[in-house]
Amino acid sequence: MIRDHYNEASLIETSEDCAIGVGYNACTDINFRAIDLIHYLEPEILKLEEEEGEEIEAKVHSEITNLREFIETFAYQFRNGANSERVTNSYPLFQKLLDVIEEKGVKHRKELGGHSPVFALRAQRENCTVFIAA
Image 1 (cartoon, rainbow, N blue to C red):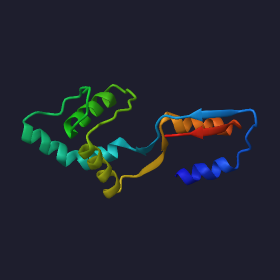
Image 2 (image 1 turned 180 degrees about the vertical axis):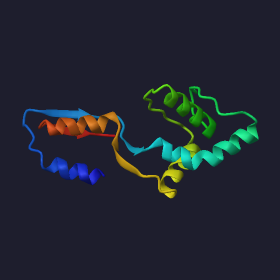
Image 3 (image 1 turned 60 degrees about the vertical axis):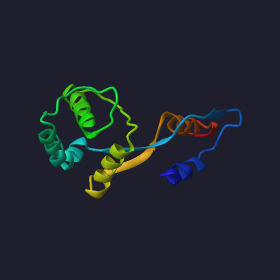
Image 4 (image 1 turned 120 degrees about the horizontal axis):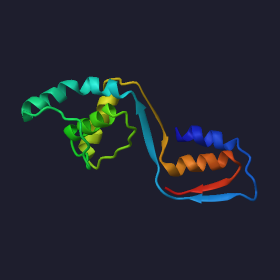
């Protein structure tokens, strides 16, 4: 993925009078159809409702630390047609979702993400020399 961007960048002729320094964060975005992920999580969601004696309720959680909070926040955003980008500090939850996506064959694609590298690539396309530190 990074190599693709590097190869593309090597074909760009830069302008001598344009230089940009960017330094924030970079990440990998994983794009997939949410319904495919939910399909594979459904048995676990139903078990969660049964064990806790409480149905999933579509509502926003300020922090997402477990599967219930993830599903409830997603359900709220989905029901209301809202676009959202959320993060979690829970490595176990993140790893669980990633494992389901990769092990169950959920069709997905990975691409360079974060504002910093995307901005840097755009500046390069406009013939600027870009220095990036992440």
